[in-house]
Image (tube, rainbow, N blue to C red):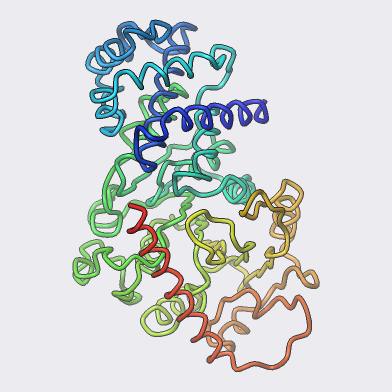
Length: 443
C-alpha cells in the first residue's frame, strides 16, 4: 500500500509543480502543493465521514466545483479555526493573487483518486518525503526508518523532538508507540504546520496543543517547574552549525542545562546536544543525527563531550553513508544516548558502505537497515562493521567518538590524528559556509 501511495505522491507533486512553475517562485512551490493536497484530503475525509463535521470541521468543501474553488476555499478556511491555524500565509497569498492558477491546481488534484486512499496521514507523509528531495529540508525517509527500528522495543509513554521540522521523524518513531504522547517544537511555523496537517488527517486534532513554534534553545516550550521536561524517547535532526542560535541568552540559562559547559558561540551543535541530553528521562533514550565534528571537536565542545562520556551516557555511534541529506554533503552519524546505561562500553557501527543510490542521494535499503539494527540489538563486534569498545578505551583516545577510529575497514597507515582532526574541522566549516552562501543566493 505504501508503494501505491508513494507513486501517487510522486506523480501528484510533479504534476502540480509543473503547473505552478513560472507563476510562483521555487520556495513557494512546497507550501502551495502541500496546502492544496491537505484540503483535497480533508474534503475526501468529510465525504467519507472520517472526521467530526459537527464540532471540529464545519461547512462544505467541494473542490469539484473548480470555477468557484477560490471562494469555496476562502469560506471554508474562515469558518474553521483549526484549518485556519495550519494554512500557510504563502498559500493564502497565492489564492488571493492568482485565483485562475488556483483553478488549474485544483483541477489537477481532482484528477487523482484520493477518495480510494485508506490512510490520509500516510499519503500526506509520502507527499512530504517526495517534496523533500526537491524543495524542503527534512530528514530522509530511510534515516527515519532506521531510527524508528532502533527504538522499536523501547518502552515509551512520551516522545519528543525539539527541532522537529515537518515532523516526519517523530511520526515514523510513533508508529511503534501508538499510545505515546508526542511533543514537538520548531522555530519554523510553516514546518510545524505541515506536521499539524498530518495530525488532523490522522484524526488527532486533540494532539495539536503539544506542538509548538519557537526557539528550543532560548525558549524551550516544555517545562517541569524551572527545568526542561523529561521524555522517554528523544529524537531529532537538529540544524547544523548555526551561529545565531542564542549564545548570549544561554550564558544565564535559567533551565540549568549547560552545567557541563557553555557551547561554542560559532556553532549550535552542542547547544542542541546538551538540551536533548537534559530532556531525556532517567530511564529514557535519545537518538540524534549529528555531523562528524560533534564527535571529535575540541575546545568548549570537547569539554562537554568528555563530561557526557564520563557520565557513561553514550550508548552507540553509527556512521551513516555520505550524501544522505539534501542540504549538505557532510557525512552524518546517529548518536544514541541512554540514561540508565549499566555496561561501560560504547558500540561503534560503520554503516558508511551500506547504501544504494537514488539519483544523487544515498539511501539505506530495508536489508541494510535490518543489518544495522540486528548488530545494534546484539551489541557485538563484527569485523569491518562494528566494534564494542570500553569507555576507558575511548578516554585513552582523547574522548574521540569518530567511528572510523574504532572500526577498521582496511589496514591504514599511521596518521597524525590531531592534524587530520583539525583539517576535517576546517573543511567542515568551509563546506557549511559554502552551503549557507548558496542558500542566500537561492533565497
